[in-house]
Amino acid sequence: MLNFYPGPSKIYPEVRNYLMDAYDEGILGAPHRGEQFVQLSRTVVGSLKRRLNIPQDYSIFFTSSATECWEILTQSLTKKKSFHIYNGSFGEKWYEYAKKLRPNAEGIRFDINEAMPVEELDISVDTELICFTQNETSNGTQVTASTILNLHNRFRDTLTAVDATSSMAGLNLKHIKADIWFASVQKCFGLPPGLGILVCSPRAIFRAKQMNERSHYNSLVSLYEKMLNYQTVHTPNTLNIYLLKRMLEDRPFIKQLDIDLTDRANELYEFFGQFTDFKLLIENEEVRSKTVLVLEANERLVEDIKKRALHHNIRLGNGYGPWQRNTFRVANFPAIANEEYEELKRFFLHYYA
Image (cartoon, rainbow, N blue to C red):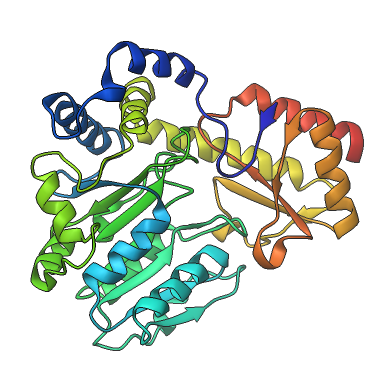
C-alpha cells in the first residue's frame, strides 16, 4: 500500500528493524527514572537540536501529541488570553480549545489564498500568547518564514507559539523567530503516532516560571524541572522516543531535507496543475504548503479518485473540515520515496489525463 495520507502517514521502512532493536536492547521495559532512559532522553534532545537547527538554549519536552501542547501552553502561559490567527480547521480548533480554558481568548480568520495579514492585526497589550499554525493540514497552506519574521518584529514583546505539526522535521524552520514550536511525530518525522515534541525558548520558560502554574500533571514548569534531569513528569512513550533517536541518526540534516521536499513539492504542483477535472485548492503559490497538497473537485469525482486509488493500493488523504467532501489531500513527507510519487503520477495519468 502506497500511503499519501497526511497523518498518520507512511513511517520509515527502517522502523521495523528499530522495533526489534528496541526489544533486544531492553529499552521497552526500562524504568523511566533510570539511567538507561535518561541517557536515551539526553541523546534525543541533543540530536533534535543538531539535526533540526533548534537553538541550543531552547528547551525540548516530550508530550503525547501536538493537541496536548495546546492545553499545556494555554494553562501554563496565559492567565487572561491568547490571540489566534488562523485560516483552517486546526488553527481554529486550537482557538476553540483555548477559549474553553480562557474565555477571553481572541482570534481572527484570514483567507486561504492570502498571506497572514500581519500589518492589519490589532492585538491588545494584555495578550500573553500569539498562536498560529505554520502549516495548515486541512487546506494545504503555509505561513512563510518572512511572514513569521514580520510577526516577530511587530509584536516582539509578546510570546509566539507555532503549531508545526505538518512541517517540523521536514522543513528548515527558523526556530529563533518564535518562542514555542510543537509537532507530533506521525507526519514529517515518519514515525508511529503517540509522541509530541514541544520546543520552548528561554523567554517562554521564564514566563512559565513567573506564572508558576502547577495545577496539572503536564504544567510547563513541572515539565521543565523534570527535563533538567532528562526525565518526564509522566511515564513516557519510551518506544517512540527510541524510534526518534534512531530516525534522527539515520536521516540527513534538516537543510537537505528541506531542499529535497521543496523540489518535490514544486514538481508535484506542476504535475497536478495540468489537470482539468480537478484543480489545486490554493491558487496563491506564495502560501501553498510544501508538505500537504490539496486538490479540489466535485464530490462525485473526489470519491471516484479515492476509490480508484485505493483499488490500486494507493491511499490518498480525505478532505478535512469545510473541504471534507470536495477535496483530497496528498502528503509530501520525507519518509515517502520518490519512486512512490512516480507511481502516483502514473495512476493519475492513466485515469484522469
